[in-house]
Amino acid sequence: RAVVAALCVHGAAGMRVVPVPRMASAQLGRECVSIVTGASRGIGKGIAVELGRAGATVYVVGRSSRERPTRDRALPEGEELTVEATAEAVSAAGGCGIAAALDASDDSALEALVARVAREKGRLDVLVCSAFTTPPKLNEDSFRGPFWQQGAAMWDAVHGVGLRSSYVLCCEAAPLLMETAAHSRPLVALVSSFGGKAYTFNVAYGVGKAATDRLARDMAVQLGPRGVDTVAVYPGIVSTEGNLELARRGEWEAASGGFAFTETPAFSGRVLVEYLRRRDLRRANSGSVQVVAELAADFGITDLDGSQPPSIRSLKFLVPNYVLPDAKLKAAFPPQIATSAIALRDRLLPDYCLDWSLFAEPPPTVADGADAAA
Image 1 (cartoon, rainbow, N blue to C red):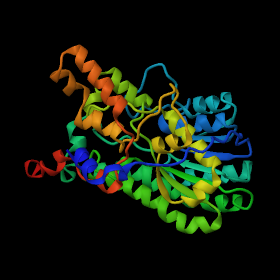
Image 2 (cartoon, one colour):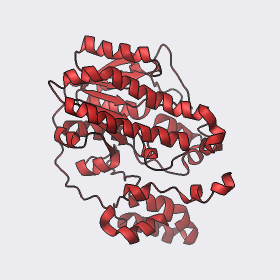
Image 3 (cartoon, one colour):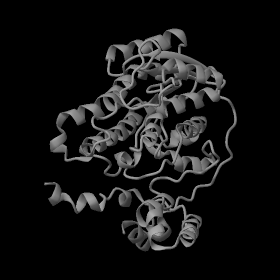
Image 4 (cartoon, one colour):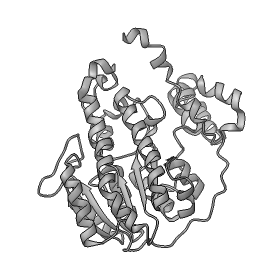
């Protein structure tokens, strides 16, 4: 209902009309030194490998190592998800991968990491903060429960590694980033989510993501004049190793609310590499929130399968998932007609992105169910 109302009121105002510039193709080169946290798997790994594909030197940071592998959630059996494996993938892609096993919640380890990079490379061009702790009871209904029932455990989980650790690492890295700015223009990228703009999962999660966005914004005030850019990036619904394992177990629908995957981890990496190349663009937008899928559309970048994933605030995503889902059409029409209706829906839907003020409205189940939850 909200989507239809938005169309009626705003018409074409929600459409992103951005010229698609020609993609840059120059390699970043080994002299582009990067740190990527949370890179043993998931989005962090996707970004690290794509930086490697562009020729960069990447310090692959994560807890899970061959000496001490970690599995804090269900993951595919037989697949090595360690910093060493990602570092090897970075090198195989054409870059230089350097494994750095550490716990991002350990301030002294983050300090030592930056000192190591300064000692070994003498510069830092890219800092990507993607580390995040799996929240408690992720696959249970209580994950979406009232905040007064979740208490401090949920708050500490989503604000420790993922917010505090990002802040601490940025504090440690800032001097080296500013030194590097004498030769190039470094970028700090914080991996956030649409939870920073709209109610998602629970109170603590949304506050943590909104704070991550604000961290990027406010750091830009102080780092921008010193030659360092910042950005918060919003991936879509990503087919990480953990999410794929949930799907294999038949648990993904309950955990996600029934959404299909829209992007691979590599998609975020492809887009971030191209954003990194466009110095004038990122300088002009330093401190902003950027949606991976929307940047990809602007840049003409596709996912691994050649598809163009929609933004989560685009009608191409919202209508099939909220207004006219496949299940609704299949229940209303015979199979052959339903298949044609789904194809017609997907073909005719415009790629309108709702204004953030509309997208941020709480879902009806949250607003209307307040009394019931109490």
